[in-house]
Image 1 (cartoon, rainbow, N blue to C red):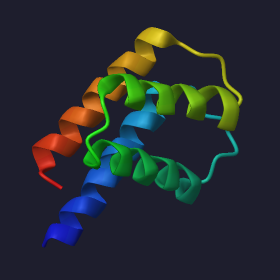
Image 2 (image 1 turned 135 degrees about the vertical axis):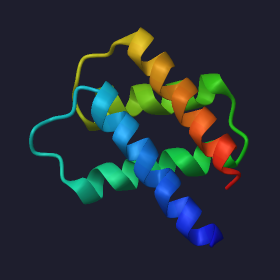
Image 3 (image 1 turned 120 degrees about the horizontal axis):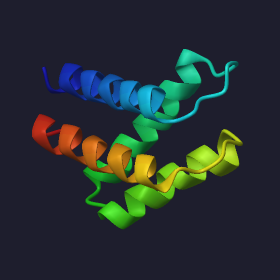
Image 4 (image 1 turned 45 degrees about the vertical axis):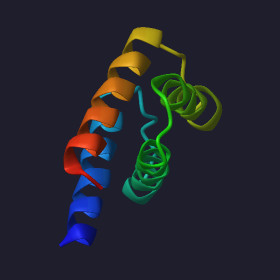
Length: 89
């Protein structure tokens, strides 16, 4: 059961990334899920809001080559942390 919760949590975080960040048209679902899984791992390890925000900024600017929107990054980071912590994974 715990594994299913972890998978769903990663999918929810992937959905947040998809909805909030300016994703390139050619990003695959598996690539997006990989980024979300990495982010969930960071949050599960107890990373602070600042660290999670930095990971999202790196994802948006360096990996996805998209312009940064700091308020959006803050929203995604806060929501992602809330999802992971409320799931208890």
